[in-house]
Image (tube, rainbow, N blue to C red; front, top):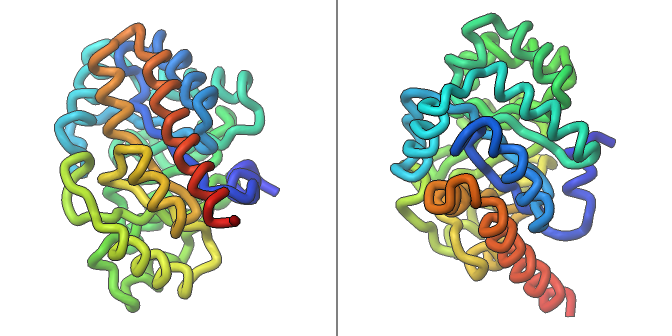
Length: 267
C-alpha cells in the first residue's frame, strides 16, 4: 500500500495541509512542515513557488513572492522534500504548483527528482488532461501519483476525461475562482462529492475556501479529506521565522474539530 493509500485508510477524514516551499526562507520550511505533521496533518502539500500563480489568491501569491525573494530554487524544493522524507518516512508528500517549473528540464528529469526525493504525488494546477503527455507518462512510469483537479463546472463528460490517468486522490476545487477568497456551501460540497464518488473509487479531497475548524469538520463529514492552504500561508506571512508554533496549533484545531465530528457521526 502506498503512503497516500495508507493515509486514506486511517478511518478518518484526512487533512491535506499546504505550505509554500521556501516561505519565508528555504531554511525555515522544514520546521513549518514538521509543525504541519505535529498538528495532525495526514498529507503535506509542498507548494513550488512560481512567478505567476494564476489559481492563487493574494495570500499565497505573497507567499510565492516571499519565497522567490529569498532565492528559493527548484533544487531547494527537492532538498526540502528529501529532508522531510528522512524525518517522516510514512507521511505522504505532494508537490503542488504550475507546469513551467515541473517540465522546463523535461518530464523525465522532474519525475526522477520526485522519486529520489520521496515525493508521492504531484498536483499541476495548469496542466489540463489534454496535455497529459507533457508530464503524466513520466510520473506514472516513476510511480508518482498525478492528482487531478475537478471543479463545480466539471460535468459528467468532462469528469471522465479528468479521471483518465488520475491517481492518488481527486482534488475537488469547491468554488470557481482563486484560493482563499470564497467559500462554498456545505450542501453544494456534499452534492459534488456524491457525484464524484459515483464516478471513481479514488478518495475525494475538498479544497479552496476551507479556513475554520467548523468548516473543516462539515466538509470532512462528507469528503475523504480537506485541503487547507491559505490560512496556513497567512500564518507564515504574519509570524515569519516563528511560524511553526502557530501553524501547529492551527492544524491541531482543525484535527480536533474533525475528529470530534467523526465521533459524533459514529455515535
